[in-house]
Amino acid sequence: MEDNPYQLTDRKILEPPTKFTGKLRYLGPGFILSASIVGSGELIATTLLGAEAGFVCLWVILFSCLVKVTLQLEFGKHAIYTGRTTMQALNDLPGPRLGKGHISIWAWLLIMSFKFLQVGGIVGGVALIFMQIPALAEFGLTWWTLFTALVVATIVSVGRYGLLEKLSLIMIGLFTIFTLISVIALQWTDNAVSGAEVLSGLDFQLPAAVILVAVGAFGITGVGGDEIMAYNYWLLEKGYASHTGPRPGWTTGEAHRIWVKRARGWIKVMTLDAIAAMVCYTLVTVLFYILGAAILHRNGLIPAKTELITQLGTIYTESLGPWAYGIFLGGALVVLFSTLFSALAAWTRLFSDSFSQLGWGDFQDPDSRKKFLTACAFIFPSIWGILFLTFKAPGLMVIIGGVASAGILLIVVYAAIIMHRKWIPRELQGGQFYRIAFVLSALAIVTVAAITGGKALGWIG
Image 1 (cartoon, rainbow, N blue to C red):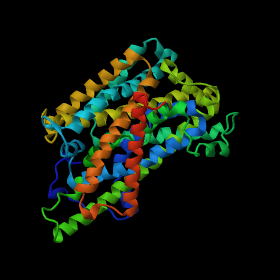
Image 2 (cartoon, helix red, strand yellow):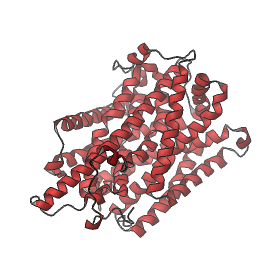
Image 3 (spheres, one colour):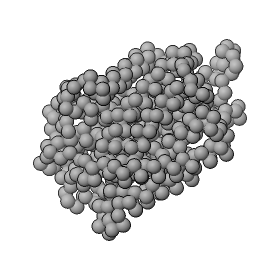
Image 4 (cartoon, rainbow, N blue to C red):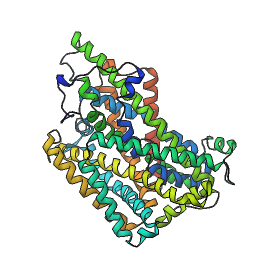
């Protein structure tokens, strides 16, 4: 990998693979994205929704996972054909500015302040897992919270893209296999799931009592707004834009034609990467929801506060037997830690770049970028740990973060519309099916954001 993947030069150009097996070799950004997605959203928010609503809201989870992908693809396209980061794109948007930064960057920073609660809840979830082990519980919750924060900070501060990708792939494989086995084993218990129950969750019903939880789950399951924004950085660091090369300064001629062909090829690789990630996180999300609805909802268990891990452990002890509780702790640790380290890796880049756009540091300079990434890698986990030790309610903290994610999606929608309508070269726009899917995605996200705002203001009962 090049030392500075954020700089495009002709010497980095590489023709895209045309065969399916060749494309598989270049997948990877979606792995990191999936490690972030399949974590707090699935283990906490999805299970909470299943526990509160039963099977009736299964469609919300499926819809959430499927509907946002076209926005992710639009952001990915922009990264490939421009080589520019998400924050650079936001700073180029039309609209009001405050100082050097576009209003969207300031709005993102404000909304992300609530997301600190979400990841603080995940830090607490990991610490609570350690507390479930008798030999380790004597160290206390505070010590394990600080330990978790320090470990993830150290990994991210020294980890380059390749390490992050490999760790993500390992974690995805582990918790996907574990959760699938647990759902299959559920069929040999009193909580077996019938086909009729699953179909009842596809009737597009949304009980008023679970609207807020459903909206929070929509914001945090599937690819969220902050994850769509982070995807560009992983694409750039993987080399998709570098391999495409700088765009010629003219829109006709042989050089432009060759560049368009190469850009289309790498966009196809990126599309496969995004779809593979979607299949993975949709599968695991549905599995967690089914477990929550089948066991927690039937038994009237609603995970909350410091009992979250204990009650979630019921899923695995009910489906596999009491001996499985230890395995559950290991699985939960992998799930939550995958979100923790991949979220921190993304946050260090997003925040460092946003600061750069506002005039603090230079994200394009490798030395300046490294300093900011390292500083953020230790500062953010410290804040997350302090927030958890203050509130000690991981379930609520994650749901609040999910609602905030719905707000970030509005910024993503606006930016994606500008990219789609004004910036993208005509040759890379996509076909009719893609354009229809893009419009549906944007409308769905705006609708959910409107419901969230109406609930918060009391306009919706």
